[in-house]
Image (spheres, rainbow, N blue to C red):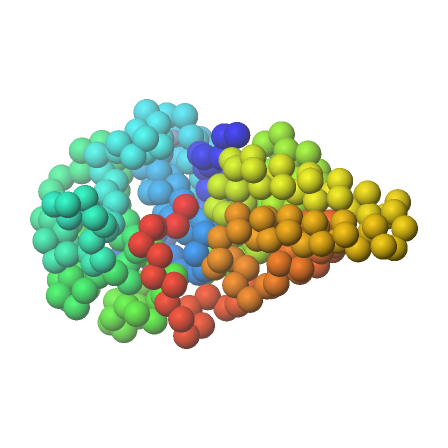
Length: 306
Ligand SMILES: [Zn+2]
């Protein structure tokens, strides 16, 4: 199942931020620093890369709507993370191969040095800092210089699920672009366009709690859908049985639901019972309402979002 969006318009359920970004390009009113913020897994990191791509698309005047063409040399390089004027500053591995927990000041110094060099190919030099909340105090202070006095045609995109962790001076000088939990219908539709059947698409959309990244990852895990099929079969069986026998089937349903629950990553469904998930799987119409992002707890997932 191919799930790599090649244009901003391909992002699932993020119409509002996509419109803001496309309008900025279309009207040639691109800010020097953006803050992409919102819950984990809703597409911020992908949006940053696609915005960087659109900022350097060679046919941007032809598309006319501020979105990248997805086909020119520049777009193809950007899609492979190989555009010489687009850099992603993220957590790096240490000498033992473990992911560092902070974005080091040397990485930011390198960014500053690079930002003053000539552009190689594109119209803009774009630096994506993701996750931006992992800059330590000295990295953030170093970055502040560029945010306050940006070289021309340099665009910074800070990506974070924890905007409150950033320096207030950086926050105040960045244009904020909010990403939201996507509607489950949008995710369901997308999964169907990728060839998934209607009920499976609905199940994953609801289980994802509005996080397309999770739904797309789950779509690549057949064991989740196989467990769902076993559950549905058991539910049909239970309907046909007399009470005593159906109670035994109910117990098997509970076990299968636990199995499904173990396949669903905790952050999406923290607090939701296996029985609640079983209701979803067996055709219930419940909608998972995730908690507000950054609401007091910092789910320090080291992996930048999709
Ligand atoms: Zn292009």
